[in-house]
Length: 182
Image 1 (cartoon, rainbow, N blue to C red):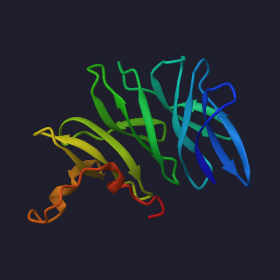
Image 2 (cartoon, helix red, strand yellow):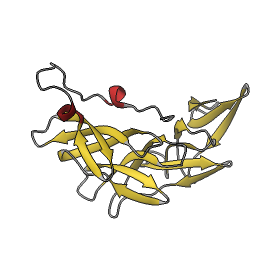
Image 3 (cartoon, rainbow, N blue to C red):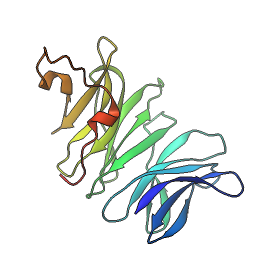
Image 4 (cartoon, rainbow, N blue to C red):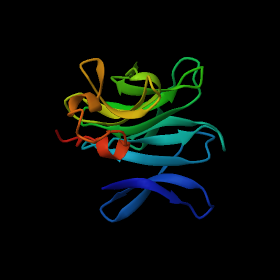
């Protein structure tokens, strides 16, 4: 199974799922201009983003049983993104605040949970596993982007977990993705 985005014959970008040799258009939020599918879990629930008006701000969405559902935004915020989903249906991503700051978010059982920051904004969640661990990137108090691990309600800089003299700075979201099968 593959999820992603593709251009329609009309030139729009739509989320799709590819199953058993067939591509299915997942559609978008009512009134929207595009959608993108970013992840799928073992139960077939798909997450991604869509907008609510052409050229409008994006919203985190999920597709389940052929229907699209908006995941919501923070109070006073205008946009959100969903990036990863685990087997339990927990979703990692981010949302903006009224101050236009970006916060790492975990959607769990229909609620948005702010994961905090490493001392400054922004922070974004990029992956999660079935043990409730979330990984992402966040700005430190010195405004450097570092990789983080969130578990048991606490956010930790992954750089604090490696030897100080290692020569490494963990920061790139691609290097912090967790395998959802753990």
